[in-house]
Image (cartoon, rainbow, N blue to C red; front, side):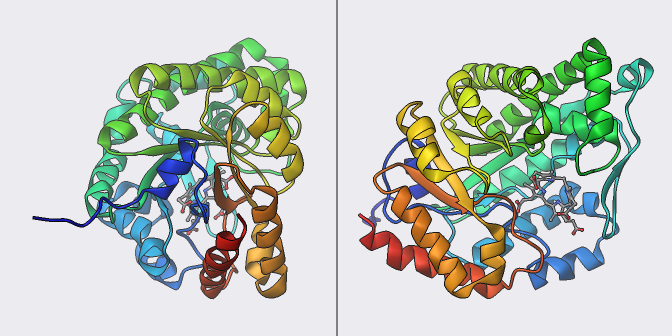
Length: 354
Ligand code: CP3
């Protein structure tokens, strides 16, 4: 008879509102270019999207950081732009320049999007989730994710990543009804995509609204908060047990309106959010679990800069359910040894913090 105790699942415990010491940890972009084993696989693939749509490769890439480090969560290896791709938009990743998409800027272009069969075209992603769930160690929670409608629409209208997404904002301001049609169809696609990830085995979901911070208040409410409400209502009906982490990056004080309106379990804080403010306004007043918000630059620099930032975060988040993470993704020039350094700080400082 197997008498070993069931493994602890610290990430799920924290997301359900328990104070876990030291806090569970995973990192946005924990798989990626800072790892030599990622670069080796990437060099052999034809394009970046091929990595996302080949379950053998995507499983391997998701597991790479888990083999190296004692992380509490494994994020599915994919990209937010698989949804525009599945809607029939041509998406490519240009070396050193980021994503390029054929821009969607007219009623005709929106109506040409292939709304039927999206789930079928994303099957390889669900296959990756199924296999990961079988291969992950039991204590490591499997995190699925999606881009949110505003950020996806921003890339689709703009046709690329830019500093301010001016073309997308111009289109949204000039033709809000048409832009709303695009947001509505993305809201539906994102809801279905997330539900299918849960059905394939995802245990946590993270929602990336990476460009929430470029919108004025009225548009933040309309294009970020309202679609998130609909997606959470839909997920709550279909999969009420799955904790959801939302990341409306750059929202500033908008984080609070988001927290009041959207029934997510947790909020991922970007690097600019004041932690004492978040503790009060989002955790204590709104009951959200917090995640974040180590500066990726501190991780890239390491040493005393890293140790100091880790200590500050642990001290401020004491006695709260909390998930340690970065405020944005791991930078490609981060030495992999700094991640090990971060995890050992969490072990030593995390224990004496309470
Ligand atoms: O480890 C993980 O976090 C899982 C994989 C993951 C990737 N992208 C892999 C990736 C996740 C969760 C994403 C999310 C994503 N993708 C976001 C939201 C998070 C954020 O950063 O705000 C966004 C905006 C994208 C769109 C995207 N994908 C951009 C702008 C770029 C180019 C810039 C860059 O950092 O390379 C990508 C490419 C991409 N996505 C890479 C990886 C590992 C690098 C591709 C390469 O090898 O060239």
